[in-house]
Amino acid sequence: MLYFTHVKSFVLRRLFLLVPILIGISIIVFSLMYFIPGDPVDIILGENALTQDKTFLRAMLHLDQSLPMQYVGFLKDLFQGNLLSIYSKENVWTEILNRFPATLELAIWAMAFAILCSIPLGILSAVKRGSFWDQSSMFISLLGISMPNFWLGPLLIILFAYKIPLFPVSDNEGFLSVILPAITLGTAMMALLSRLTRTSALEVLNEDYIRTARAKGVQEKWVLFKHVLRNALIPVITIAGIQTGALLSGAIITETVFDWPGIGTLLVESIQMRNYPMVQSCVLFIAITYVLINLATDLLYGWIDPRIRLQ
Image (cartoon, rainbow, N blue to C red; front, side, top):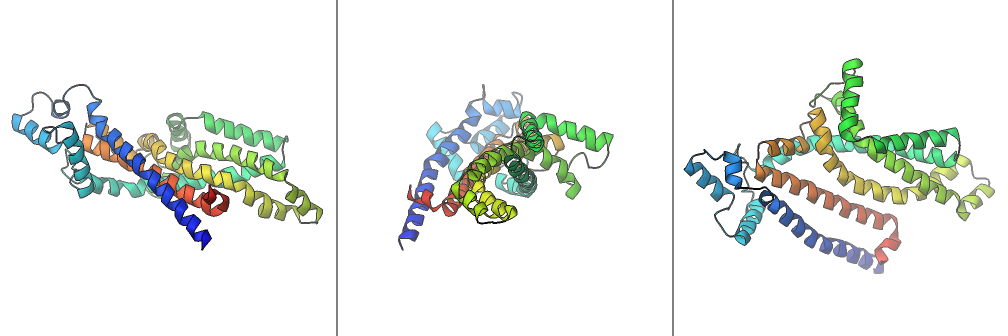
């Protein structure tokens, strides 16, 4: 009974902390339109637009009301589903949810690539510390951290779409289309997680229970998989969860480079067209998703390590 009480308290504390965060995010997103110099209506429609069009857009964006009422109207339209795209006149959430599966698919493949490469590299580096394998894997991770998406993406396109035509250049045309974007998006995370796995595994290898297991004659593979890997992955899971949210923001550049039909491409298109309701909604959606993923990571970490729930 006491266990479930601690779990409930832990979850409620995390949920309570979300309220001011979400309010702050909504205020920042609402203020995006006012960071731009000049009248938003003139910027969107142009100074030569018809008066009735300007009046309609001003009412649509609640610009004919006081600033507090504009914020209230923004939240009301947001939650009631009345926030419309300026050009298509469709609900912004409809367009965002239509694009979200593509972004989710890209993020899942990027995460899979990062985890499948980073954990073996990190464990190998820790076990073979100071060897050629250790130095090689750490060089690969350093290279991965150093290469930005906007450089790595075009490089992969040149190598594996033009020089060696193995993969499609753009759009979502099946499994082959996601490989290059996933590698581009997941490389930095792979590099970070491999170094973290190595550091965490080195700490675990020096623990007394590892020496005890080896002294009892436990096979080395079981020592690595049952004791080292299991305990070394606790901090890795935390960082991986946080970085999963960061994949959404990193996907903006990657989707633009590969013309991937996700939320990142929608956001860039909306910025170019000055579709401010769509820009606000995309930024808000990405921010809320990031916050919720961090919450899920906290809950998962608390489940893996029960000591966290008592703090």
